[in-house]
Image (cartoon, rainbow, N blue to C red):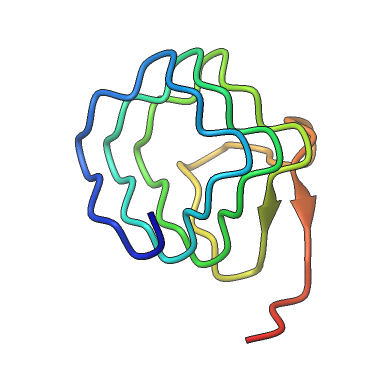
Length: 85
């Protein structure tokens, strides 16, 4: 799913654990109750995504990952990594 356009997608309850979502467009996607444990969210765009109940434990993100306003990825147990290209 590297670079996938999932903008507005209904991914409620989806199992995306360890998925490669690098550079994915997830704007306005519903990820309610989805499993993203260990997923790569490097450079992903999650602005206005619904993240209620989403499991982000160990999901990797970098400074280029865009989150919805006010969302705290650290509190969600996601892991900030250096982008190695």
